[in-house]
Amino acid sequence: MNLTNLRVGIIGLGYVGLPLAAAFGKIRDVVGYDINKERIDQLKDYHDKTLELSSEEIRESVYLKFTSDSNDLASLNCFIVTVPTPINESNDPDLNPLNSATKMIGSVLKKGDIVIYESTVYPGLTEEVCVPILEEESQLILDKDFYVGYSPERINPGDKNHQLADIVKITSGSTEESAEIIDQLYRSIITVGTHKASSIRVAEAAKVIENTQRDVNIALINELAKIFNIMGIDTDEVLTAAQTKWNFLPFKPGLVGGHCIGVDPYYLTYKSQMLDYNPEIILAGRKINDGMSDYIANKTIEMLSDKGNIEPNKVLILGLTFKENCPDLRNSKVFDIIDILNKNDLIVDVFDPWVEQSLNKSSSNFKLIRDLSSDYYNAIIIAVAHDEFLNMGIDKIRSLGKKDCFLYDLKSMFNSDQTNLRL
Image (cartoon, rainbow, N blue to C red; front, top):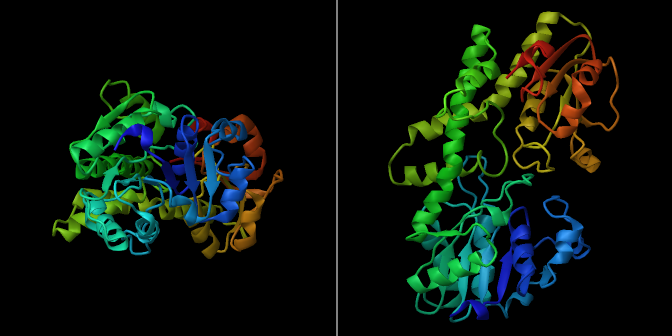
């Protein structure tokens, strides 16, 4: 087992897998696999719909080949799994994508092969869930015939300042030798270096608490925002004042969506409850953050009700993605706001220059618009801090609403005296 002989395959070419495949593809042969043939065809044409990579960046990966045929994986000896690890409607881990990928790898696994997982999981899942599947499918034995590792993804969609090579990579392996080979593999593409954890379980735990910590801190600020709103105090002004102390953590209130912060904590709480420990703070934070859509929608309804309009109120929401300056809609809590407004007979338009117009084909409770009308809306909610909205300016945004339009700035993009309410 050595670095030179590794023939690498990336399983799953989403926000995590594609940048990883492209990085390896600049220096070594690598196969990028995804079950979505349409996605593969687009990548073969050098188009990434997630906008994480440009056409030129894909072209630069001259040793990267794309496929949706699992037979193309048979000649590989190192598999890196980057498939999603979502939750179900009960907020329990949905391991179907991970299990399916693991079964597929197990069917082609050979003696001496390495399987590395990057998908976010709870501590112990790689060895307790994935390894038995690999052993059953391959009829091989861990650490005798094959090896596993865990190196959690740290991709931040839409963030061009913190790219794959610029973020320290945690690595681990099932044996000392495999851990070292895995660490060397990632060191070949990570400019700032790696951190080799003492075990797979430590690496898994380190990843899952990254987003859990952020989730809990945001929940605290969201609760403070609710309290300050009752008091008539602007939350952003409070935070600006508090941040003058060097050790104050600069978290902001807001919606917590996406595939990471709003999902990963449930993996940890699931495992914790399996062990008969109820994680009170983590679950309390999840409850607060999951409830922010209701809070924002109801506050909007309340403000419109106070105006006493007879005709159906028309609401414009600026932004639909889960975060600014990216097209990622996964687990966006803006959809929840729309649902509540819609159920209260409000007419909702959404403007988001990052979202494809085709989305509206499957959406009946709002209209995704491309042209903005002046003097039209009773309420405007700035939900996502896209640069385009900042560049529009407050006067242009205000002009979209009627004279007494309620402007709710969830991201504090504009000054408090320019809006009716900031979160």
